[in-house]
Image: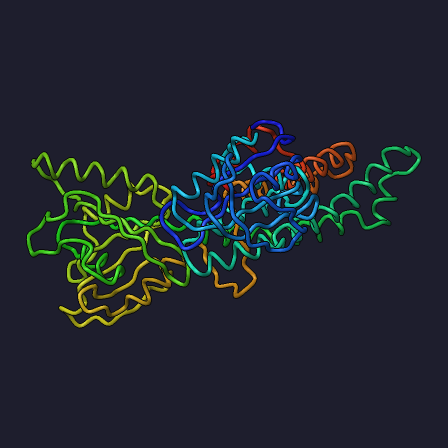
Length: 444
């Protein structure tokens, strides 16, 4: 991205027609734009009804102008917002006038990046902005708001501050050779390390929940033809998303449907039945089934409850590898079985046709994914956050294993702090920032 000393401008509302549209400007020269655009002198942080003017002084639109002098703005720079009518041609005309006056069209995420660089947001909060916009459920939106409010950052910073205090203790011992391991033992250094590790484990567990809430769960339905995969998809979706017939092999391609269970997004994929066949179209569908399984978080193997697990199902299970598998005995409405779950939680009995046992399936899917209802405390997290936390956790474990090798202990603690700093952006490579803010929409 370009240096953030110039003035940028963009339409900050979504494309399409709307009652209100916003053009936003940010930069060091905002005052020079106010008079030509509005014909007025604006009071800071006060809404002023005015006309938005072109180069000849004619009205492009009318609406509300808001001026936020630095540093009291979203970006930390002076910001001007022009809130007019939501027609795209109207907004484009106002934006073009801003560009004529010397502004530059903002790049994706550039307003939020400037907020980050100016210390108005840390990196977790900046990511939470786009997560809030993209939230796929009400629970995801609430969790993104908690991250934006700084809850996740506070948890990370709390662990990091405790780690810094421990580093100071260890490195002070290194600086004064006359002190030895007994000094650290008297200061309960290893007890402090265990306490920090416990706190980090709690944050990591919650971050895994937040990542699942943000990214969802890929669930692939597999099994032989005519065992009820499409019926189960329809039951979970709540409508006829897939064609269901008595003819084996009706589904020949993957059918995808997005649902929510307890606010967690699930991407359900119905696949072609797995069997020996010479039908070229069906063979192609079977290839896609195995391809879908490579990206699955959970596989649901459907079998006919009357027949149980046979040689073909055993072969499928053997091919699953490390993918968590839930074996579902379907069509209990045709026999004497009632909905229930096996003692190990890996098998359950239900009827996709009548809906008996569907609630048990939903709970089992979330359980297999590692979801635990945590109430209102969940914050939204990303895969990169979880990976950084795991690296920090590995460093703390390595530190605990160093014994009396204080140089190694100090180094592992430093690496652990560095991993935590990556999450909030205190230690981040420019290319990582480019990837993160490149996901934002223009105007944010």
